[in-house]
Length: 105
Image 1 (cartoon, rainbow, N blue to C red):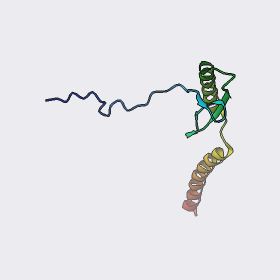
Image 2 (tube, rainbow, N blue to C red; image 1 turned 180 degrees about the vertical axis):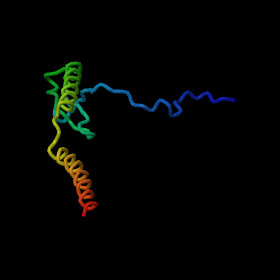
Image 3 (cartoon, rainbow, N blue to C red; image 1 turned 45 degrees about the horizontal axis):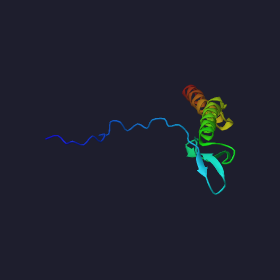
Image 4 (cartoon, rainbow, N blue to C red; image 1 turned 90 degrees about the vertical axis):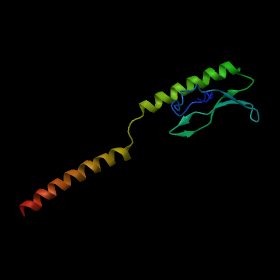
């Protein structure tokens, strides 16, 4: 007899994209949000509790999320990454040149 449980069986394990929500920080009297930047959860201050409503803070959090995503897309490659790519390519080139010289000699 089949079970009556409607729990997912491992097929729908994908997380859906969630909107960034504003959270009240009562101790400091501010609205904050927790975006994920470079795989790490960070805290960003949105404004004071007395200046913003929940809806305004949520809208500001959404704007911040979009701007962070755009900044991540626009970032230029770091010098370290370019140097690593160059070393990989030049080491391959050096190996082929060296092998050709060894065959001749």
